[in-house]
Length: 353
Image 1 (cartoon, rainbow, N blue to C red):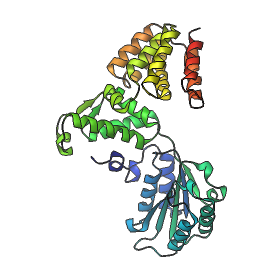
Image 2 (spheres, rainbow, N blue to C red):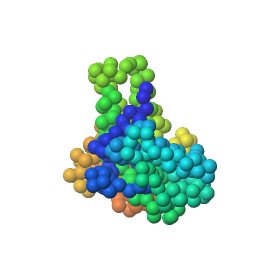
Image 3 (cartoon, one colour):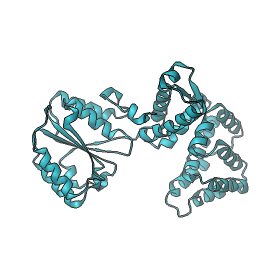
Image 4 (cartoon, rainbow, N blue to C red):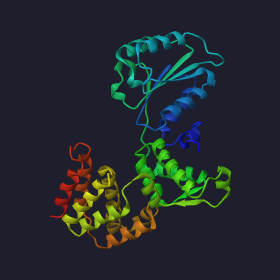
């Protein structure tokens, strides 16, 4: 099976999702022939930095043989950059520019930074550098000041959700609303991670139905993938655990709520992911019990079973703004706590007073 992220990697400007503020500026620069000699793309993983770099290079008329991609994580030393400096002085093979895409550029050593700085200060006219990083704070200010900088936004859950549904359809599968939403959640703001999860799910679904060619799959009835299947394949907390925890909170039963947390830990599930799922479902309950107009918005994002649970709990009017605030505070503290479940346990005791 082909890696989905590579198969569906953006190939032209119109394929780029969620970075309109960057695409419009770059397209205008190319049209006006005012292109910088160095760019710095920053943003979290899987947001499209390298893809946009490749599209930019090709939009400048650069042939594949004149595009050089360098992974700074494995080419971070002074000798590597010295070799690069010698290489940039050579004219391109068949293009107006040679484009160097340096990924994870924050990994360069101090000496390598100094060597690269000399090249950026006096770049050959036929060379364009595109630096990409997930950690802008580690890039020296002297480098930043010599580049045109662009900050890539993390795509929203809704954007990743819609993208996952579209890719699944292309592959011959239908994601139910709950499955699509869980894949988007597990993607954590990264198209690449979300498609990696989708790929794993599709591979498992394909094995269950027997090996088929992509042509056969696309010409047959689309197989439906449920949230339960995604939970099983990815090891995400099951809806039953999340529902049990919420029911006990609403019933003010701290003992059973904390017992559920123990089951989450025993299953080696991430408390942070569990907390996010609890927060999301309690938010939906809170919205529904206070705003009936949110019904369609919620139904579009959850499975039928989840909708039944959410609407039933909303009728009890048991979720308050203070409960959601306590959960939000706990979620914020989980990553900084030496005992991961402790912030949530404390929040439970606070909520059931």
